[in-house]
Picture 1 (cartoon, rainbow, N blue to C red):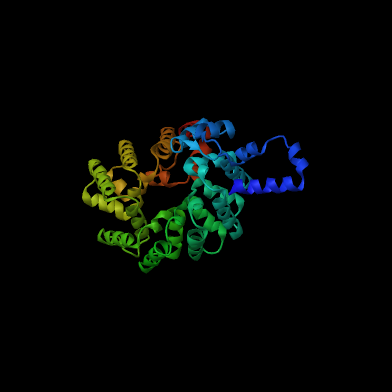
Picture 2 (picture 1 turned 90 degrees about the vertical axis):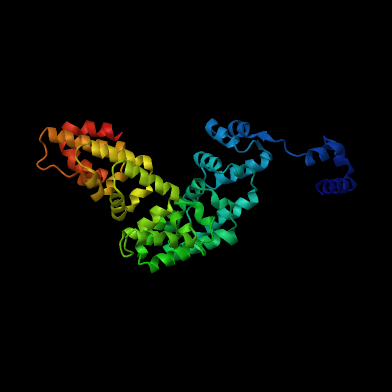
Length: 374
C-alpha cells in the first residue's frame, strides 16, 4: 500500500511539474526501494552500548533474554519518549533489565498508560519510580485493568494519590489481578474476623501481595491460624495470616525443622508463633544464625528467645553484634549504672541506641560502634 501511494504521488507530481523530477537527485526506482526497505536488526548488546551508552552489565542481562532489536528506529522512539517523560538513564536501565521486551514494544501502546497515570494526578517522579521498579503497568489495558485497579485501591486507601502511589512503588502486582475478585473479598473477610481497618491498611502498604491471593486460600490460612491458638481478636492474627501466606507447606516444614535442630520443642515453636508470627516470614538461615548467635553470648537461653522472639528478625551483623559489643565495652569499663536487658537493647531504633549508649561515651565506644555498623 505504501508503494502504491508513493507511485501515485510521484505520477501526480510529474504531471503537474515535470521539471521537478529532472532536478531530483535520485531515481524513482531507488526512492521506492529506500521507502519500502525494512530496518536492519541490531544485536541488543551493540544497540544498548553503542547507540545509547547503556552499561555492559545491563546490555549483558538484557541480551540473555532478547537477542536483537528488530526495529531500531521504533525502539529509539520508545526510549526518547520515556526520557521526555522523566525517566533518567538509571531508570531506563532498571526498566529494561526488568522488562527486556519493552525494546520491541509499540510506542502507541505505551503512551496511553503513562498519560492515564498523569491524568489521575500522579506526579511524574512517582510514575517513573513505580513503573521502573515494576513495569507491570506497561503491559496492562487501561480500561480492563489499570482503571479498575486504581479505583479498587482508592476504595481502600482513600482518594489521596500519594497513598496509592506508595503502594504501587511496593508492587505492580495489583495490576495483574482482578482486585474485585481478590483484594476486595480478602479485605471484607479480614474485617469479618475482627481485623481493624488500620491494620488492614498497614498490611496493604507493607505486604501488598497478601491481598492478591485467592480468597479461598486466605480462608484456609485463617482456619490454620485458628487451630494454632491465635485469637481472632489478637493483633497477631493478621500477622499470622501474612506469615503463612508467604510460604509453601514445604517451607513451613523446613522452618519447623530448623527450630527443632536448635533445641526448640513443638510447644516452644508454637509459643514463638503465637507471640510473634512474623518470625516465620524470615528465612531459615536467618532464624538459625540469629538463634545461634544469641545463645552463644551467654546472655540468654531458649526460654528467653521464646519470650522475646522478635529478636530473631534482626540482622546479626548489622544490629545484634554491633550493639552487644558496645554494651560489652561499656560494662567492662563500669560505665553503666544499670545493665539493660537484651530485649531493650535490640528493640531500640538505631537513633535511640546511638543517643543512649554511644553518644555519651563516644570516646570509649564511638569508633567501635561505627566500625561494626558499617
